[in-house]
Length: 203
Image (cartoon, rainbow, N blue to C red; front, side, top):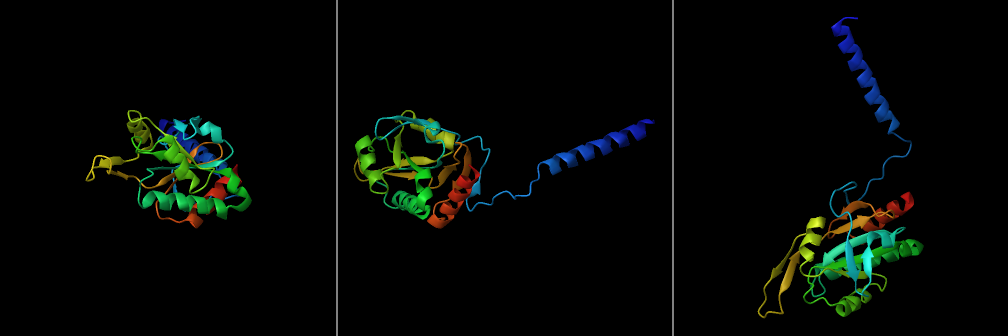
């Protein structure tokens, strides 16, 4: 066999092998399409180790079997945060019996003012099963970086009346604790509820 024939044969075998791999990856069921941005396999927002408003240490493993939605905000936020948490409470209602398989988590970007008691009351005003998580001021930058979350303190007229600029989307994890979706602010409860149902059906 000439060198040219050998090259052609190797190319043909490689092509057939690649085609076989592609076919092997196909199934009768199409991959689900989500309303949110699909970030499955992302190398960020992969987990956390924080303390909740009850003083309990928490990681994603604590919520295995549930779809987890994580939002970064602060309790004195005038609009984006209460809107997002109200939307999440509506998602739980829309899920009906599956609502118990949804866990809402709120990570504070204002640890100076958001005490555990304040955060507990804040969560209760949306849904008593939602949990607020706390990162110490010196640990928060690393947590935010690991989620690619932006936040910045904006001074007010007095030292305690400042506000916080921050990212407004939510991260969605499947029941196995894998990061799957980024839900953009303002996308609506119905869209998020539909995505959560799809993730639960895959479990």
